Image 1: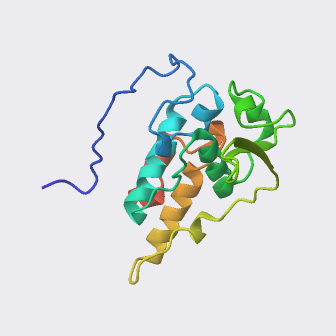
Image 2: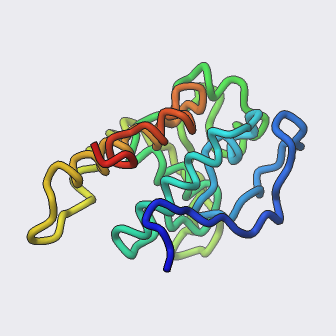
Length: 179
C-alpha cells in the first residue's frame, strides 16, 4: 500500500544539470511546457514547477490546462490565464520574433479558413482569468482545501520564472502540508 504523501517521478529523458542546458523551444512535452522554454529564455527548476502545476490541474480536473497544438497557441493560452508577459522578460527571449512584434505585442499564428495560408494576427489586451473560475469543486469537497489548491496553482502559474513558487515554498504550501 502506498503512503498518501509519496510522489513518484518517472521519464527522465530530458533530465539535465541545472544551468547546463541548451536553449531550445521544444524541450518538455508541449502541454506541460513552461513559457520560458518557448520564449527562449534560460531555464532552471521553475520550469519543473510549471510542469508539476500542469499535472496537478490535470489530475484534479481530468483535463489538460494548456492544450495548444503549437508553441504559439501555448503562449496564447498562458496569457489567457495569466495576462500579458512582462516586457522585460520578453526582451531577453531568443525566440521572441516568432511570437511577438517589434513592440512586444503578441502575434497569433493561425490558418486562414478560406485560403488555408498561415496568417499572423495581432492580439492586444489579453485579460487574465482567476484560476478559481476554471476549477470547480465537487459537492461535499472541503472548501478550505479547494481554496488552498487554487492558491497553489495561482502561485505556480506565474509567467515570470523568477517570481514563480519555489520547490521549498511549494512543499510548505497549505495544500501540500494539509494545514
